[in-house]
Amino acid sequence: MTKNLLHLTKSKYVSGLRCERKLWLDVHDHGPYVDPPLGSVMDIGNRVGRGAHKLFPGGIEIEAAPWEHGLAVEQTKSLMEDEETPAIFEGAFEYNDIRIRVDVLERLGHKVWGLREVKSSLSVKEESGHFDDVAVQFYVLRGCGVKVPSVELIHINKQYLRGDPGIVWSELFLGMERMVSMPSSRYSLVRADVLLEAEERSQNIKGAITNQMAILARSEAPDVYPGKHLCQRPYKCNYWSHCTAGKPDDWINYLPAVR
Image (cartoon, rainbow, N blue to C red; front, side, top):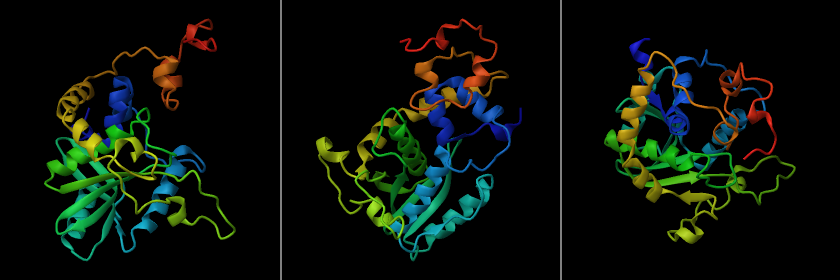
């Protein structure tokens, strides 16, 4: 086990909240980095993320690769110091053993920024870890001394219909300019204000990090009993086959509609 493995990312942190075994495997047994297959959930998410860049004219993307974290942090710092940069895409930060890449960091004023997380879903979803995703980024940004008075989750406008010219991203993310404060109507918008959720959940992150780092320090993955509710919702875990290998043919989880 090498020391440089013992850090978290926002995706690994969210994985750890879902399943401690998945967290350990994500860090210690994930295999080499590969580009997501064409048409996969991750590929579609990447496309939507790039499309959202068009909503922030003049924004600059960090060029460093995902594994070049130190370089990405330096590039991000340089762009933040340039007052002419209106937005930064894939900005890199690190605090308390967590490394993050922010989808969009929008300049709101002098040394004041807005955190913008982009999702390919049709709404903000608790079960998909959206709140925990923005919360851990908010925690890291605050820990790095970044002023973040605004946190938003940008998602697909399900009323959008593509025409002949192709996708018009400003229409796909319809409602970008609208902001509301009433919780009852907040999530009907495409650009959802989730600052309250980010602030509330960030208060528990320090303790969660301590627990997750202890899990990563183990020599073997923790035992977690696989089941449909844990491993296949809201999406099927990549380690389902790994964790269910060797189960008997009459294993109860093979039965349909078992609750």
